[in-house]
Length: 210
Image (tube, rainbow, N blue to C red; front, side, top):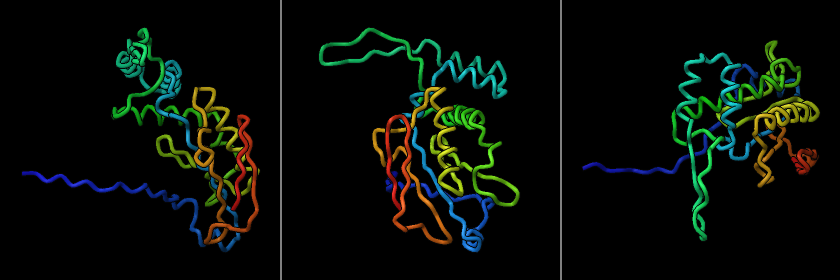
């Protein structure tokens, strides 16, 4: 007899890479660090197939692998059942499959394309440490932007927003608390000085206080 034990999942802990430098160093130099946590609206469901195949090619994925993936997604159809009956069948042109082991990899390539086009590797905005500039951390559809000033953070945010929308991804605006959350860190504690910053995007105004 087998016993099934279910445990409540804990939220993943996000650890900054050591290359950013220890918080102790940031405290010594009295540097502010500003974070922006981005949440895409229905990220996996909004991956456009035509854009995906184009991105895979530009990212150097071999043609035979791209062709295999296209065949896996070709001919998908769906219908919607309502209280008044079912709709006509229609083609599915967006979304990577939930639960498929390939989906996170495909989305990572999609996100990498966005970040490259946003020019985050070339920009000087970000946290300077060990002759490097680090301005983003990513895990699948979770993206964190980092900078040493509000202005730099806004600049990074708008670049990512513009490039994301070009390939069909939008920042989540259904819940203002999850669309963009901005925090700042000074020394070894989160700031709580009562100052605030306003960020504007897509007609939505978010007011953040720390």
